[in-house]
Image 1 (tube, rainbow, N blue to C red):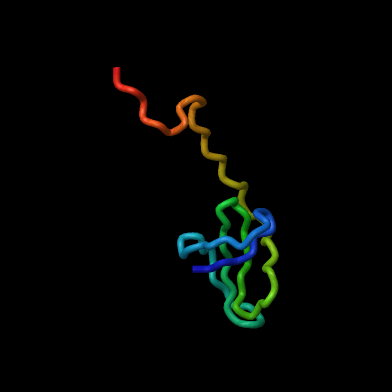
Image 2: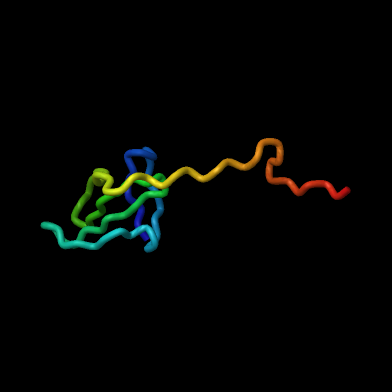
Length: 80
């Protein structure tokens, strides 16, 4: 699990192993490229004590999830 700073979300975000895009060697040790829930690529390094910078996007962000139909509100519908 990783908790990097995401500049797009303006907060630390808990990211699991499914969010790992790549692991590579860095000058101060291994670096991990993560994709935040908002779609921003983040570079995390154990050597960094500061907030990691967002990596440049290599692919367009995923399309947003469709909103729930208005008026339903997530409640069960009454039986008729």
